[in-house]
Length: 134
Image 1 (cartoon, rainbow, N blue to C red):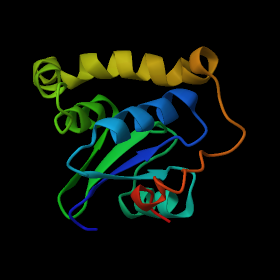
Image 2 (image 1 turned 180 degrees about the vertical axis):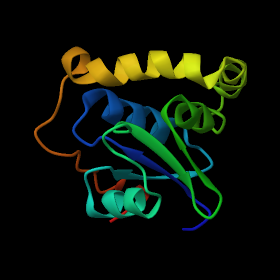
Image 3 (image 1 turned 180 degrees about the horizontal axis):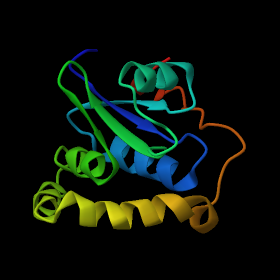
Image 4 (image 1 turned 120 degrees about the horizontal axis):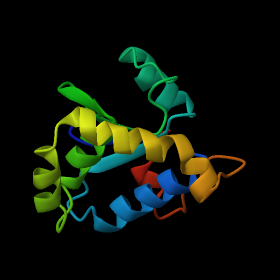
């Protein structure tokens, strides 16, 4: 499992859940594993890295033993592993992260208003359960 990259996401956010579903469908090389930020393992992984969830509360990418990425850097790192999105990720990476994060933060701030919110975290189907960390 240590070779898998971990995507932590806001489990009650419709946009974040949609993003995870989007990645799962395109993760042909089985690169990623998933956990809700609100889950026990999500909280542990966040705590181990001293990530302030008052500032980062939507998507975090963890490459175990290497690094973690937040905000737009996380999204672009994820895109690098998805066929058809590698080039756009490389191009967007040319934009300074401060500018990218202005857009990212705007979307993150209004994601519940624009896309809605669930009452509880997504429960994966039996077929997808192996992709989610317990």
